[in-house]
Length: 245
Ligand code: 5GP
Image (tube, protein in one colour):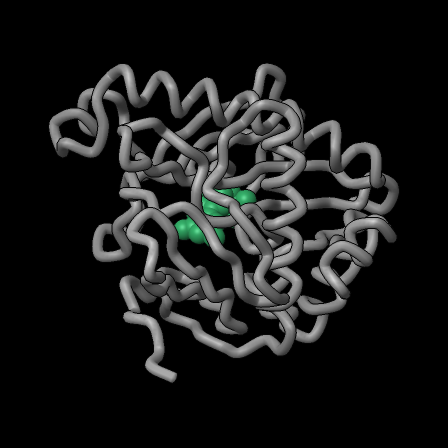
């Protein structure tokens, strides 16, 4: 069988063409990187967990009126999604101060941020994903003022839905990154993934980290157990049956 054409290869996912020009196949790999790709390891089963966690989260968002790229979990590791023209902006929502925020500004680690902070970074490893403001984003032709406004409001809505969803399973959604793209009609739609690779997730009781921060801090041996923990808390028996897990 002729394999599908590779359209894009990112640090943890690959995107392939399908016969339908409006749809693509997204493969979640086991690659894990940190420091703009400076450190690279393979973490077994990461693609399995992240593809399923993303599918579940995107379904929950759709149920709550947020349009996403997700069409179908073809099999663990492989999603069928809408083809989007991605906007090279990472929209970050922070409910607690940690990570790069406390390295850049004088916040105490763990401080609750209410209202949450909305940050936009330019997705560009060569420039180390620098923080944007509206006028820089527009001058770089990354997005119009209207599009920036839409992305900010969508990210805040996603935060509301997901903060509640995670709180219900004993997890604090500390912060996360989302990416948007445009469909063939120019609508702005949530794309990429939402997984422990792109969120900071702390256990509500112990405040233990259950996300990629473990890898960033060199605790590689703990990564897959943390991802499995998120998977086990998030997926219902019904989900497992539906997806033959
Ligand atoms: P920070 O800016 O503190 O490093 O990250 C804030 C949040 O956004 C974290 O949840 C982090 O996982 C996510 N994030 C920021 N930049 C990236 C990125 O380039 N890739 C991924 N996967 N997540 C990111």
